[in-house]
Length: 472
Image (cartoon, rainbow, N blue to C red; front, side):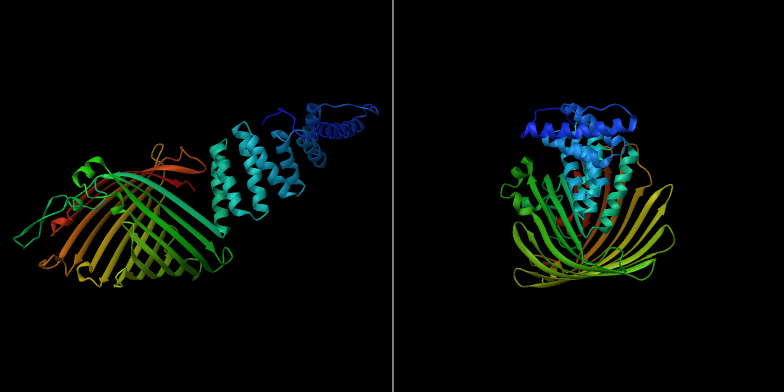
């Protein structure tokens, strides 16, 4: 924090106020120590600042505040005076004044320790004035400047507590990912159908095209009930988008393809409730509605009913069921229904970490029978209990089988329908030692392969993604 600097505005009045208050401070000290006093003393601004600090150290908080105000009047850019004002105003139960001074002290701070201390006061006073979102923001600012790992751990713990009581929750994530197959295109230029002696030729845009995927997932929640209530009700909003930039090789191979042809986005609003059945289990229900776009054009509207149940089976294991039913209507007023049910188990082992296994069933009944399908998938996830060197690690493996019983290619009915078998693996690496405002970079490595009796759907994708997520 700058100790000196140019004196702005009302200089003489500010210096006079500082001098007068400094006289009071000196006289008070002299009276306590028996030192002689004079009837007339003159003080410079540095002497007034020294008296301000001395008053704070000696516990004369009210006088320290008055001295800080006088110094600030003489020089609003005096960061130390702003910090003393923030400290004293908070101890005198003046949180609004303390918050204003703490934000100024943070702006004027010259060291990480000064920034950390100012951000802590700003976060505390924002909380005391019920500005919970601002308190979370100041905790994130203090996280960057925290002097020790223990300080960062404490900030993360306080942030989680605020998140539990704050009715407003915002979550943002971003990703940027080079990919070998941004359009889910075929591995081959020819289309073979098992059991059919004919061979088709695929257009360039139906074949795998390389490029760059980028997008964001923005979520918000506003809780309508008090925190910790047995029955919780909340409003949710979400906007997700994914866009593509084709590589020069892809544009050369498919000159008619455009970046916007493969864009996808979805927006939805939901009302969700959760009811605790006791200390160990809870049920949830939700209603959602939204709209999806593909290729920059409206694709379908949807409404969804959600349900779930979870139970703690011991200290380290959690079991659950969840599912939804979704009704979709496309731009041609054709309806389709999607039903999905999942069962999952999550188990924590102190030495190995957390394992999560999920089994899902899905049924899609479309007005266009060729898109009607049934699928089953199994997914295993592992999060190690400790960091692996400088990184956190998440691993996942998923296998899916899908059946399209009435699939056709043009006028050709596929014998026995179309069957796809997919295997996907992913590894997410987080870098907690590289953070900004408590957000850390994340590197995602993913590979997937699908094999089908209709070779158009034989696909392979390798991707390397860079994203950003919250560390707490």
